[in-house]
Image 1 (cartoon, rainbow, N blue to C red):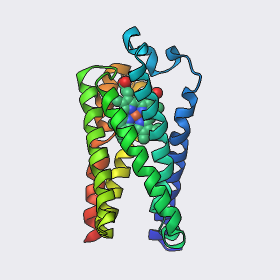
Image 2 (cartoon, rainbow, N blue to C red; image 1 turned 180 degrees about the vertical axis):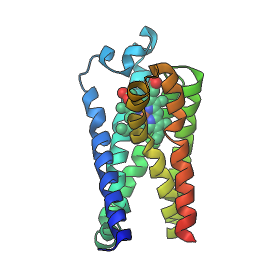
Image 3 (cartoon, helix red, strand yellow; image 1 turned 180 degrees about the horizontal axis):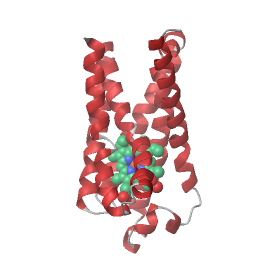
Length: 207
Ligand code: HEM
């Protein structure tokens, strides 16, 4: 196996590993008392709002589904051998992003830490919805090259759920930064570098 192929396989392995691990993470919220999760930092008014709670749970469970449905779509072999499965998972991914992204945009305005994380998460939600809808419309044309570029961008944004959960222990544990200042930074750091690296990757790939 040459070096490039080996690196690609390692990359796919970690992509899949993190996607499964974080994709299943929302399941821990089932039956979990509010005070044992981020919901513990929310006001009584918010916790008594069925609209907020519906949006919150829609966001986390369908966000997890998007991560799980999305990662295998990048395996060339699977796309070639099982095109029907690729299309079915693609439809699940788009529907999950649409609902999780809209719900994420709604709950962003009540983010712990105030306006800075709120704007960070709202920006992420808007770009996630935008890139995913472009991926969908480009495959309908069909423009496969454009579809692949938009899907790479969309999934890099979806991966903010993973990077956020890698940065949090790094900032609050290893760097000993308090949760709120760390959260303000990470609400942006979890996705802006992802999309910048993705653009570099896309440019290099087509060069
Ligand atoms: C990519 C677009 C995403 C956006 C814009 C977004 C936005 C948000 C927002 C605004 C919150 C509430 C934060 C707060 O109240 O302080 C949140 C929490 C959460 N999100 Fe997302 N999110 C995204 C992706 C995902 C994905 C793909 C998952 C799948 C695992 C996910 C799982 C969660 C979970 C479990 C929480 C609860 C907080 C925690 O315990 O970590 N999110 N998200």
